[in-house]
Image (cartoon, rainbow, N blue to C red; front, side, top):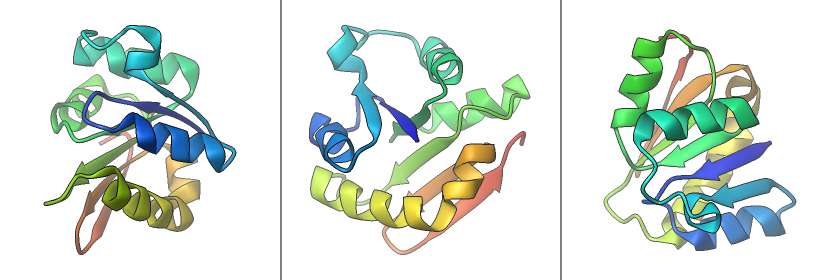
Length: 120
């Protein structure tokens, strides 16, 4: 799987994904920290990446686009430190790998996961 981390995600999460063998990039690595949300979504789609974010706008943008991809993992945590995100992300990847490949939005909270297949 390939990942694109939005600005609310720590570069340490990207490093963790890379150390686990995943292809992962952060917007900062490419100098795209000011890229508008709609363009971030297009970038993830074109590059075949799963978008990691804390921004609710991406779910809306994907829904109104009618597209199936990219998949989005949306973190809605009280503590959004990279340690907490990494732990919840590991669990999400184990539980929803097939859904993420097919196209889905996974909402991750402290106590639950909510998955919706795309298009929404």
